[in-house]
Length: 351
Image (cartoon, rainbow, N blue to C red; front, top):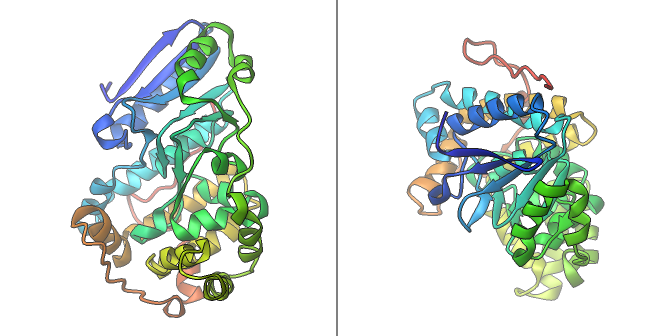
């Protein structure tokens, strides 16, 4: 038991509240284990007809995983991070295969591990202040928790914009890229939760509103840019567009964002998206596990976390300093098993 997860039954709904608001409800191992335990219990509880995930506080559903712990463990060459990822990915799989409807209230920040919870739910609700992203390349890592599969299958390759820039997008873009299903105005969210508890998931339609297509007037240009076959080709198209349109154009901003991210993270992400686009959830999460385990043993992950999260100097000194320095052999090695005690892969079981 942990007070960082609040579980309660309200009417027909089991409500799971991530209760770590000072950390924007970032996940730690205790929280993952408690979510798993409650979900398995509720699967056999007849009074629970659906499950709702929400975050405590007003800053967001979940900002990701406990990066500080992963950083310490990486420096110590430990296996605490591997244990966390194993349990987290097993939770993500459980949510993806849950036999009862699952509803994610994606208010505020929903990043990384928050996508692992929300992205695998059957009904994903965004609102006015939603900011969705998979920003892992910014810390020398790569989208995990099954997010690479979502990114790879986003319409018109727009998931690659999120993956390579490490940017956050709003509610319209979250729906456009396949990370969410419904938009509900913020002032209606509490009414929606009460209606779900009373009547079930069909009531979402009563509160959902149209929000329009994401990315606005830039969408057509973005579709063209991200249709390029490689990250190098994408950068070339961005360079040409930024040169033509000027420093205030979206392409110039995207170019700046991508260039400051980890070259290793970018190349592994490119490979991961190509690998997992046609994979099952189970296959993707298995690939993510080995990828994450390898990243934790690579100096660029620790350096990225140091620069962005720990010291916050925003000046990572990447070991792999350029895209050209990242060999295809190194990239592929991130998806191979590690034959060492403590690195046992996840065991995926639906309830």
